[in-house]
Image 1 (cartoon, rainbow, N blue to C red):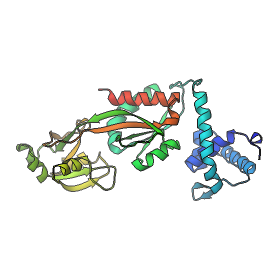
Image 2: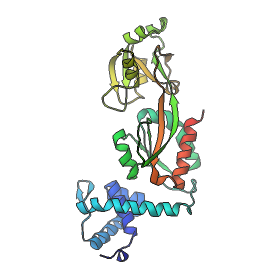
Image 3: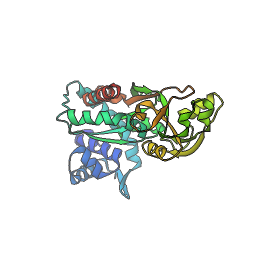
Image 4: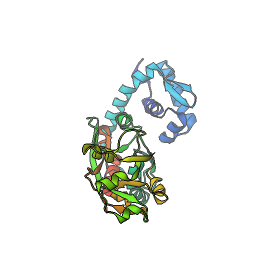
Length: 297
């Protein structure tokens, strides 16, 4: 087959269908109708003599040929896109984009109350979608453009990604305002006698507090394990449970705050994005806004 006989725009549609696995979502991202997406896919199927995608429930599953094709297509589109970026202009007030960010429940609570008002004021046409993506899936999601950004602990080392620091925060312990422990000095022994709520996006494994205690040969009593940070303070209000979370988040709740009687490294968060988007004006503007709002008082 001759490449000159194929409409190269069809490869853009192909990449979005591959990424989304759904024609309706692909149409929304491409800002065209679903019949137009179906028509483009039909034309590319005829040109390449391969079905490319097969329907499995509500998802479009790529064929073996499509799996082999997606890498070269993405590389070509990235190279072309980067070549055009130097001439492109981005106007945040006029843009209509869906921005996808991976962040934990904790990161959302820390960052979104400041980021979202700024976005609504400066770029009202942007739709923000957030979800949690496990750390071992972040690289794939960013390099395949399933995500625009990921907010993570600074533990990912991959040349396909760029990152910069967002914020760091120390921890405090919270209890209800009439908790008996408030009549004592918070020593390590007192802390360890409390029953604790453990909050983590991960379904299992130790958290930063537990790791800090393990380094000094101690272990706390976990009474409840949650993946949702925001429900935890409500449980603290009505029980004798203790909750240890970042200080910047603790100020939002009507609870008593106690300094920790042992050393815990500050919680650091970094912003990650694909190296392929490094020169993208929209990506540049958005990541600067995220950093600015995260570091503002």
